Length: 274
Picture (cartoon, rainbow, N blue to C red):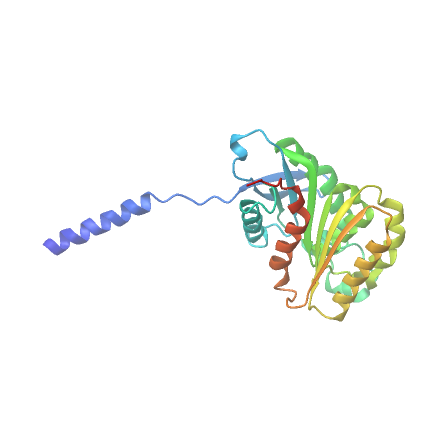
């Protein structure tokens, strides 16, 4: 009988402990109705510590591949850590959850094999319109953001990041372009880059560009983009080009983004005198 009572007491304590558990909240989920894409898009948003208690405004990072099961969680961890150690200022993250990244992150291709293999591709122009006309106005209206915007993309996300930089550079002050898929459409974006830079780049931008050990084509294309951005001077480009030979396409994002955020944001943190 005593054993039965003891088991009941133990089970009751377990139930009590479980009843006291609360969810661990990393951010908020929001939605924006896009007229440009004719669909509703899910946003995962990280608000820095103290956001609810003050009236300050914050820089904002727009994260491509920002679904909860993609890059939102680990990128938020990087930003939280770098903020904690004062390597970057408190910053809002807007993670853009994917619907069809091949559609949204690629421009039309002339390569028949790619058209057949990826039939939904070619919608990047509409997605860029979404960034400009739907998403940024929504974030500016509903969150306290500074006019300091950073776009982060890897792989196909790096491709569209490069496309935005070349076609509409004014949409962001900073670009983080990691392992960009510049091979798309026989590297036509690289071919057009010099003329696009001369035509469109009218204000200062910071660009962090990196590539890992990802094959000769990826490495060559990234180096070529870096050279084109350097050659664009005296256009106002501050370039950080950082190869990561120890990383591959699957491992590069986290370590490269750590270095990229440090490079781009460190100068924004006030020096605290001892």
